[in-house]
Image (cartoon, rainbow, N blue to C red; front, side):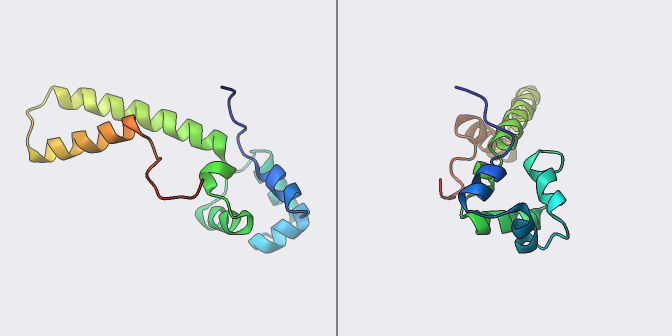
Length: 118
């Protein structure tokens, strides 16, 4: 499977027939160059901009930023594996069991249970 692009903002913007200037206006950004920076992965959006992009394009952020999602998933799973390995060396109690369930669920099916539209 090919690696996804960092983001698909340009494709969604063009598909919606919008200019960078119009998207900047809709997002409350002062200039179109800020949209360009988002599209070219020079800048990542803050939470408010991400939510506005989701609303504007009716698409979850994880799809708009598929490459970022991939990287976040890979890194988070790696840390979860390391945490599980550390936990193996400790005595198990009820709290440890809950942690283990959470981490194992993350590794088994990362992010698919968020209830987001696909």
